[in-house]
Length: 348
Image (cartoon, rainbow, N blue to C red; front, side, top):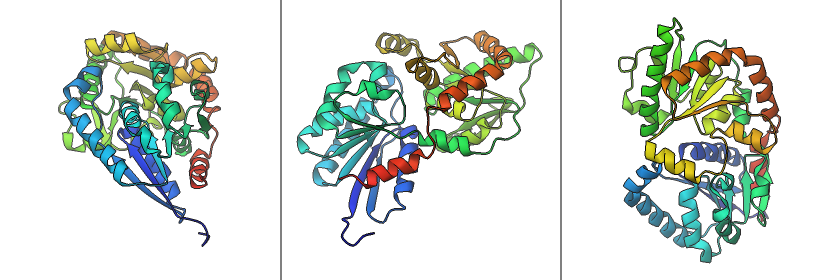
């Protein structure tokens, strides 16, 4: 550290498992600089779905007031908000008169929910750093930077194992995991009746699920593990993946997948009325905004028979899927984590 260089303090606010993972990657990279001090504030994973948010409104509101009070009392050089848009947009409205320097890393999905979220970002955010190459057009009048996607880089660099069996990724929140596991078990039963039995069937879950004690006794034929989803994706032949970040992780792992999402009927109706995009998986959305063909089969509110049908089709189109994956991955330049960290370190 140059003796004349002032030490900087960065505060990271996160609230979802995927956002926290990105933040920790970045903080680890920033820790290599002696001129920076970082702090991560993390909240319990929020409820998923509109009905669940209503049920847990009191808890979410309590977290909101805690972080607002902390920001008022602790002036720092830069605040980095990571993903978790519903919470952070409300917080931005509340703190806009504090004149804080705020960088939004992984910004709200304006392209999915509409531009009504844009004005508060234009009033309060100094810069947006995106991990998706197509987002610049959605954030006019805000300084915008894109350096690539550190998670895609990390998964691409992991060694590929001998591929066999099925990898199922049912989500991270309880209502997602249990709902999808029940659906997947029914699909596996139908496949078995046809004489098709995947072996092994991996189900890697977040480390936070270790205390749930899921076992093969409850879900026969499924091998549960924790914190190793990328390794399991790179050693499986095909995958069934809940929509979200995991769909892009599967592309980085070159795993042919079906994107599957089933939720409460009312949640599904509300989501359909609010979403402004034609796809539910990140790779297909990226392809859409760049004028490419979709690369993943999507099933929203499916029955087990639909999963069986699409699984059998995956084997017919493996080579075509691989080529489409390469087209998507070419949009993500390597070395992104260091570029983002260098950019934050040299902020004025």
